[in-house]
Each structure stands twice: as C-alpha cells, then as structure tokens.
Length: 170
Image 1 (cartoon, rainbow, N blue to C red):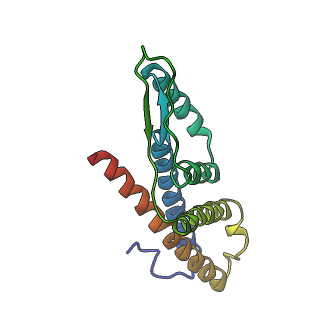
Image 2 (cartoon, rainbow, N blue to C red):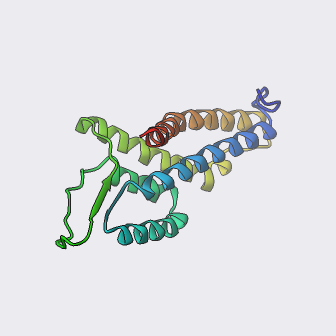
C-alpha cells in the first residue's frame, strides 16, 4: 500500500488516486492504439504498409472516446467480408481481429467501453471540481469515487492485455 492510500481524507491521497487513475487510462489508450492499428487491414503488401503508417499517425491524435468508439466498431462490431483487389497478378492480404460473442454480450461490452470513455473524460475535465479538497469529507468522497473508477477500468484493461498476449502467442 502506498503511504497516502491509508488516509483517504487528505488532499494528497485524493491527488495520488487521480494520478493512479490517469495512468490506468493512459495504459488503456496505449493498448487500444496498438490493437486498433492491426485490427483490420487489407490490400497488397505495399497498401498494407501504407495503411499501417497512416494508422500510426492518426492514432496519436485520437481521444479515448474515439479510440473506444473505433474498438466498438472494429473489434466488437460486424465482421468484415473478404475483399479481392480484382488483380490476380498481385497478392492481396486481408487481416481482421474481432471478438465473437452473442449480440447481447457485445452490446454490454460496447456499453462498458462508452462508460469508460465518459469516466475518463469526467476525471480529466470535472471530477476535481465536484469535491472540496479543503475538507476531509470532500477528500474522502473524491477518493471513494476514484477507487470505484479505478476498479471500473480494471476488467477492460485486463481484457486488452489478454488480447495483446493472445496476439503475441499466435
């Protein structure tokens, strides 16, 4: 246990939790960028190389909300159909990564990703303003909210880490 975790009624404990949660959200964003980079692409080897470079450039600018939205569409959405370039002289590759699950499970998963993006935005834009860090009650309330938020993100982070490990092994 970190030294400021013990007493949740101090500004230091609250701010430590803010940093901890931001770190978790940044880790999730990083994993989303990596997974989305190779979730779907198709074309010739030259086209795929270009898609990867363009994807890396675009991903750097994406927000958590947009990354979660892309994940919902590309990984939890409809499965792509195979395309053919029409040119039999060139080798055409198509790679797709998606999760197969019953529709209600996929809906629940997409909902959790949208909720996570909202929580991240609340942390960055408004959470610190909703509690008075000058009072013990305000600090305790903020710490309780941050602990809850941290645990909300845990299963999604683990899901991404498992997906990355599966890709490494495959």
